[in-house]
Structure formats: C-alpha cells, structure tokens
Amino acid sequence: MPVEFIGMISTKDQSETRLSAGPVIDKDYTRRFARAHEDAGFDRVLIGYASAQPDGLQVAAYAAARTERLGFLVAHRPGFVAPTLAARQFATLDQFTGGRIAVHIITGGNDSEQRRDGDHLGKDERYARTDEYLDIIKLAWTSQAPFSYDGAHYQVEDFYSEVKSPQQPRIRLYFGGSSDAAYRVGGKHADTFALWGEPLAETKQQIDSVNAAASNAGRTDIPGISVSFRPILGPTQELAWERAHRILDLTRENVEDFRKRRRRQDWGLGGAQPENSGSRRLLAAAAKGELHDRALWTPLAQATGAAGNSTALVGTPETVAQALLDYIDIGVTTILIRGYDPYDDAIDYGRHLLPLVREEVARRDAERAGANAAAQAEQPAPARAGQAAVSA
Image (cartoon, rainbow, N blue to C red; front, side, top):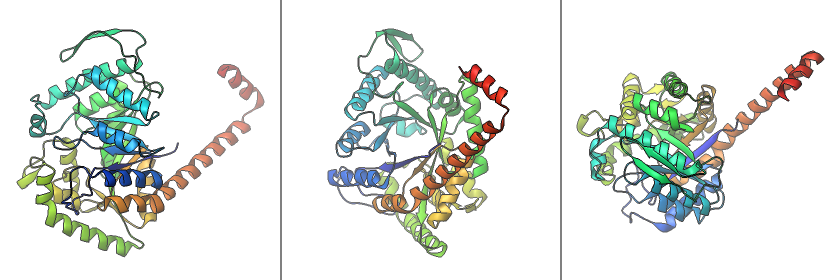
C-alpha cells in the first residue's frame, strides 16, 4: 500500500530557528511554499490552527487556487462554529478544489488557548462535544434525506445539505490526540489517526490503543496512522549531526521569543508540565534519552517544551528513509514531515527522501503481491475453483 506524505505550510517564513519580522500573511511566500510542496511530490499539506493565526479554510482556498494537484489538510477545532455550517464550508471548498480537501480534527489540549476563542469547556467535555460534532458532520456529508440529532451539546432538526463532497463517500477525517479520550473519539471517527513522533515501541502501543478503540466502537476496519517528524538531513552522518546541533543551539536561543510570537506561553513554559498528553509523552521520551531507535532525536522537543511535533530524525537521506520504513513496518500509513528551514527543507525532502521511501514501499508491495500470486498458483486446481465459486 503506498505511503502518504504530508507537509505543512504557513503564511510566513518562520520556524523555531527563523524568527521572521515580516507580515503575518505573506501571499507570495504562501504561494511559493504550496508550490514547493506540490513540486516535491507531497500528497497533502497541513494548515495548522491557533487562536492568533490566519483562518485555515481561507489559506487552503488561496493555496489551492495556485496549485493543481496538492491536497490540503485543514486543522479544525470543533465547537466554534455549528457542525452543519462547518460541513457546508468544507464541502463547498472541496467542490471548488476538485476533491483536494481533508479535515484534521484537533479537540484542543490547552485550556487557556481554548478560552482565547471563547471556549470554557474542560477537556472531557470537549471530547464529548467533538464526538457529537463529528456524528453530525458525517451525517451532513452523506445523508440523502433530512435528519435530526438530539445530543447533549448539539440539537439539529430536519437538516439537509445539498452541498456534497466530490470524494466518496465523503471528505476524509484525520484526528489528533494521545489521551484515552482521544483514542475513544478518534478511534470511532478517524479515517487516519495522527500521532507525534515517539520511539517505535511507544508508537506501537498507541497504534494498538487506537485500533482497540476502533474495535470497541463497532468498526470493522482500522484507521490509518499518521506520525509526525522533523527530519534533519545531511550528505553524511557527520554533517547531518552537525546541522542538528546548530538547529538545537538556535532553537534554544530563540525559543522564548518564538513562543511569544506564536502565543504558546501556556504550553510547558517556565518548567510547567504541558496539559496535552502528546506533549507530555514527547517529554517523557526525551527524559529517557536523546537518541532512540535508528535516528529519533529528542533534545529539540525538550528545548521547546514539546510545543508541537518536535522530535527529529537525523542522518543521511538513506538513514532517515530507513527510520521511516521502521514506522511503516509497525502500521504507519502516513508520514507528516516539516523542517526547520521550512521552504528549502520541503524541496530537499522531495529530492532526496520521499523517492527513497516510496521506491522501497513499492518494491515491498510488488514482492508481496508476487508471493501471494505464487501461493495461489501452487494451490490444487479444485481449491482454486472452489474459492472462485465462493467469491462469486
């Protein structure tokens, strides 16, 4: 099965190591950044959500009008607009973009950040609201007749939307989180469940938790799994590690200013433990050691208080590709990567990293298909005929 690659775009040239003084929305940079991902061969790009940042739907509409193939994964927090309205907004944009829209649901892992947008529910209530929200959105996208919904957070009467997605059966839902509540709600609703980049053993534990939640919700399928990393590449191992330590030094110099600019003052600053489970898990991995498995490096997560996906994979393209394949081997279907030099790194990933992973995945798929065909050919003729009859 082909692996899906997702990048991430923003509306200005900024990262933990690049403190841009430019405008919040740089239209030319946004256009070039989206085009760089399309030219690099990414399947989609994530457009993030924060209470002080530009609206993701409008960023996606602008970038989609300036690309031809690239998909857009728009981060969305349930609770700030009615689910029926959100369903129409996303379906409308999906029609105009020819089916290039997906939605990344983030319920919210920080109370202060939520309150900036006027949301005063606690974490458990937010997840209960998200569950109902996604029930309604999925009905709005798929129902061929008016429906009603009577929940604790939402009541809808006789709703029907004429606006449907060109995708079948509907727009894809991605879902982020690492708590028991996230597993429960995301396991029920997600087409792809998104995790931050932890060591292999811990990632496998999370995958098992997501799959168990999906089974408990009565699903007969399992969600895809996305894992996020910050690859740091070099032509040799030594040069890759030199670059990694330069990035770490710059991050430590810039981190306070960067957090203030991004309004993340509540995400683990001043030694405080972050509220969200994903950040706590990354910090726990960092406390166990700097280097895990083949190439997973954690000091950058520690330096930022794990404010976002912040674990790196360090090495040559061949080393990092093999590290990504290790995650694919345990059930990962989607890789989300972004760099510390965001624009140039996206180009480098497309030149040096994505092809290596895709070629190996294709080789393995072909080898597996050949082995299955050979096994079938070796079965006695009556058994093959019997199977054909059953299949028919």
